[in-house]
Image 1 (spheres, one colour):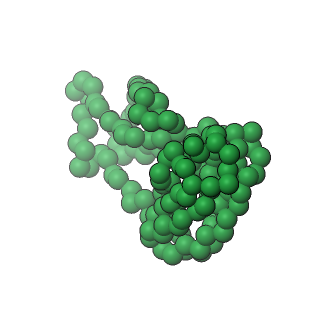
Image 2: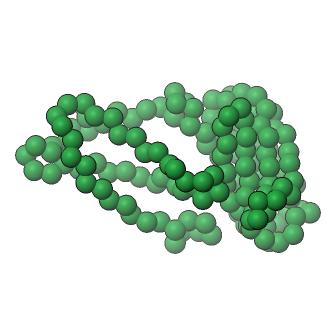
Image 3: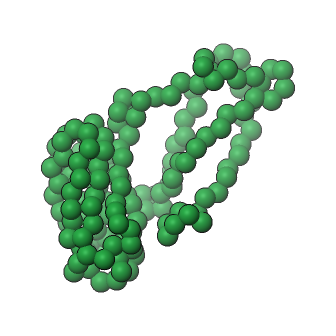
Length: 150
C-alpha cells in the first residue's frame, strides 16, 4: 500500500504474437469512480523466437499526441483549500465537480485552462470530513481522482 487510495498489484499476462510489428493497447473497462493507475509496464521475450529489441519493437507515444489528460490534487488529505493541477494540451473550460462517495454532487466549479500546465486553488473548507471524488469534465473527456477531507 502506497497511500490512501493506492494499493499496487502486479498483473502478468502471456501473449503469443506472430512475427512482425505489433500494437499493444491497455484499455480500461472500469467505471469512472473505480479507476486505476498504470504505474509501469515490462515487455519480455522468451525463447529464441521471443526476443524483443526495445529500440525497434516498442514505440512510446507522446501523451499530447493522443490527448491523455493529466490531473493531480494536493494536498491529499485536504483540510481547507486544495490545488488542482491540470497538465495537458487542452485549452478551454473545465467543469470540476465534487461528489460524495454516494455520488451526490457537493460542489461545482468552472476552471478556464490554458494549454499545458494550469493550477487552480479550490476552497473545500465547507465540506464535511469524509471521502470524495473530484471529476473534471472537458468536452467529452472525464477524469476522476479520489481525495479525503479532514
